[in-house]
Image 1 (spheres, rainbow, N blue to C red):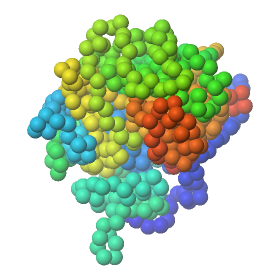
Image 2 (cartoon, one colour):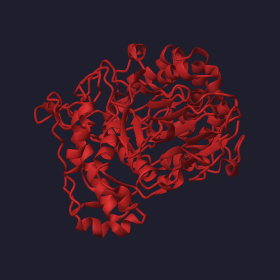
Image 3 (tube, helix red, strand yellow):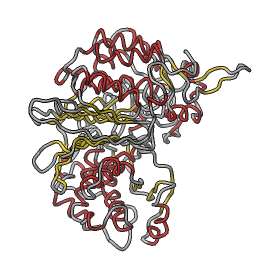
Image 4 (cartoon, rainbow, N blue to C red):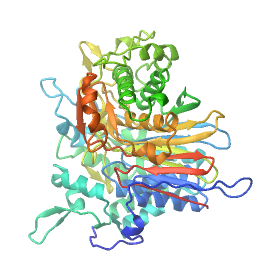
Length: 577
């Protein structure tokens, strides 16, 4: 590890770590060049994507470069040893593809994976830390699959920005420094303790600080293998072997992940889920993420109410949106799991008549309290017990549009923060298996999201792509935030489409979330003044920090409009190629 106070390549001023950037660039018509835009959670990553786009790369090419750099500079949130969902809009054909790189449970996993000897769920931290929470990583194979179809540049070229940063060093961003400083376990973990901490003059370990320079030669070697050998460089040979060894020999709760699990992993293309909203068509990922269906349910319920007339962030609009969230989250907890293992009633859950019936349950004068799942015509779905979710607020999202008009909206994660806290190949290993229900059955009914070998845990990731009334691309957006992702993203879509805000304004709005429990409102915002009035409507209101990390791009008649969430370290890069 190299530590100093210099910043190779970019000064801190150039990095800007500016929390919010909105950029408009003129479109060029006919055969002249068009602008590109990258909005991501870290300036190094945004610049890596822009570098690839300047060379003529596609949105998918840029996404691979962005992900490779995020694994290095934002390891608490995402990485190549994790999973991701990617939406891709092809400008030439108008086709929308959904790429599933979600992790899978090892073949040695059992429904009792997170139960103690008495059959009771483990405390989350105990379940999270160590080898038993690590799923077979999916990001690299997903990126390979997407590149085979939509890549323009050579695969190896896409990893050069990340290799360069790993070898020469990068400046620790504020969010990473804060995450290291407050983590209760990281200092005790092998490999991680040597990477994220340095020895002070008394020989005591202290966390690296904002602005310190870190190099990661182990990650550089991993990237070189992946660059040279494609997906095989990750799923076969030394990289996979090191990950398997770290999991099986973990100091806490060793896991069963094996080379056979790596060999059998498959990234998948799935059909996106889409639904009309106002004059637009909103699309997202299908299961095994619950994000797409749940977001579309919230919008479908609210489509029967005049949110524009309620005006932005008023008592009335907050109440109605929160009530719609309750109803959709209730359905989410009963019906959604890995569609390769359980029948997910997607059509029934998005049926307009069903959503209209759910909307009729909203009372303008009082909250309904805890919502129950709706009754669906698919009788198989009615047999599931309620999931017991524990989603932690980590993850990352980026949005990209290239000079050809192709778009990527990608949400990526190692869970965590810092995943399982194990490191191998210079990467944090995910703890994604804790996204399964710890209890395999509730009141004698099996849970759709129970652990099973080879199964993908249910996610909350909600990458969004929106089309306008003419069927043209309009916007891409997404966020980190655990199970709150769905609320963050849906609120932003409402701000864009109902309240006609620009991307900066939509992303900067105060956050509120109702996951069918208390109504959480963002501390230090105007929502705090609304708390007594919300309580008069019966809401149980909790004030807390809500760390969304929204990154979005929108097309306007004046050009591209992009923004990065002021709550994190991200930025937007745009220019004419």
